[in-house]
Image 1: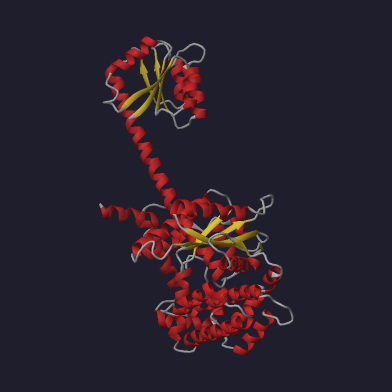
Image 2 (image 1 turned 135 degrees about the vertical axis):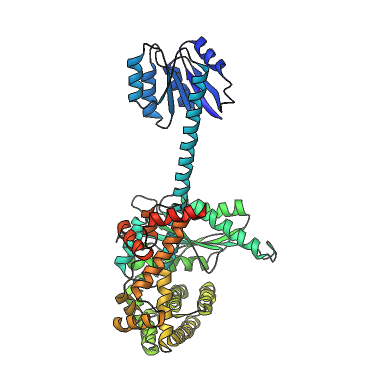
Length: 538
């Protein structure tokens, strides 16, 4: 039922119009009446807004033109219509100039009123449908964007970076511009939901639903505050991470307040306990992974009754010591299967010249486990058992009470990762190509080129190009294009997103270039492809 506000300074005319037709049968109800423009504006301000304002054009103090003009300014979505006499031509012309499409001449005829309301009802329905479609498109785009944001944040803290310039460009594309700045400041938080073993019985479905509810609550709580970016732990669905921007002028304890609020929400709405940890402040790109590892350290030392910050004397010094250059040397030693070089670098990290407390050893061990996981993910094919083992080690690393125990665990894990690298690099060419192909399939929506991938996998670019074509059957460039086109086709069939959004999601910064590539591959433009698909679905 559409609401109507009827405005006329003569009560008799208002009563006559109300009695002309059965308003409910026409789909309307007279929700408000006003005897002048001022009274009408007061009612509009109190709300809720009507769908249609039907006003006399000639009224004392404030005429219909002045009322409609103010309504257009304050309530641009409000539909308006006017009542006029035969001598009101100049007023009527002014109303039309204000965008008024509908008018009735006095005395109002029943048929004309019914016809006008039918036309307005259809316009309102069409506009509501357009707004629903627009909102659905906005929601769909937002869901896709949030999913990509979360996946990319997890990649940034866990995986090897393709290149810093490519990272910054992708952050801009994913509307994470604050993170693309060189001097950004942030802290990480980790929050884990703890469900008692007997709470959900043995039903896997019920556990999945509980984890989903936990993740949704985490996202909703984060969405109420600016500068907080949640992302899930793929290997452990009852854990969520948060990147919390530390802006100038923002309280230092903002991360602590957010985590406290989230823990209260988890207890209140899910009726379970949770464990949380907050990491050290990370300033700039060099400290990003260290900040993440420090939140994992804090989480590992927390209990359900409190959440800890990793702030321990000397930890900041250690985070600064574990530089990207040090990480690069360690990765290079592992991927070159050079255990002596790896152990030399390890001695630099775990220096015996300083009295490093066990908690600091634990932090450095977590950084090493992140490094191992990144290498294992790159070279482990068709089997994620090593990655799962590394994750389990992350979960239990704080159980070690001695430096010797931690060092022994790291040395053992390094050997396991090197074995995985060896199997892929020094078996058939097909294995290394499969590793490259696997990496491309996970990252095709980012900027990719063969030269950087060759460096990443320790291969000659020309050799990799020929090897890829030999085992995959198409060139590297054609393979990447094929992945992007296939994803674009899927998104076009869903008929929810604009072409510019689809272009960005599949890895093209220019929508016109995307259209050119798509037409070359499919024989029709993205717009034509979508229209043909929808036509065939009828």
